[in-house]
Length: 144
Ligand SMILES: [Cu+2]
Image (cartoon, rainbow, N blue to C red; front, side, top):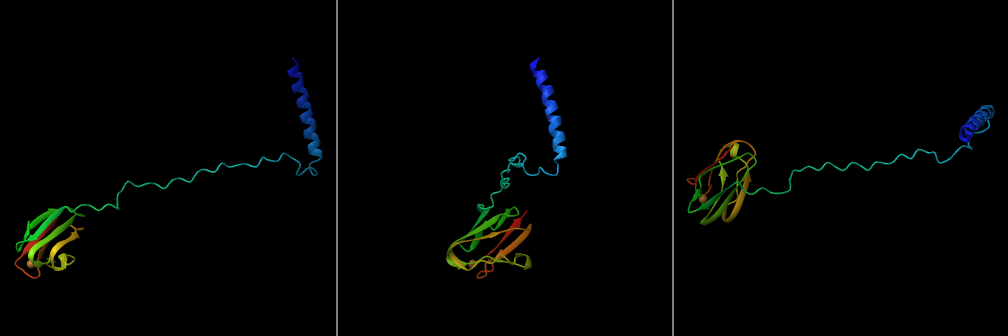
């Protein structure tokens, strides 16, 4: 078998080279194979984890209270935490939405005769309010 013979010769050659190399160890720096630089394949940067949350979209009002005919209607509404209540003003005289007590301090609309005003409730509880011009006009928002 010729291949077996060749292999034997190759082994001999290799051994010889190895020996020679050992002898010339000090002298043969630099002449080796080039291009063996490990090319680390650069992995593409992991894409930013996309969150499915839609924080940009504004939630529609969970409840709408009409401010008309000298009253809030419905006078009592119930929403969930994070919900927005919108008051729609449409009366012959102006009104406002004014929270009653420290808890409802943030509820404070301008005085309006037309248009609407919204408030987003972020804590559970019952929030009572009135119209600053007509304190007999009262309503409440319960946040669950
Ligand atoms: Cu009023």
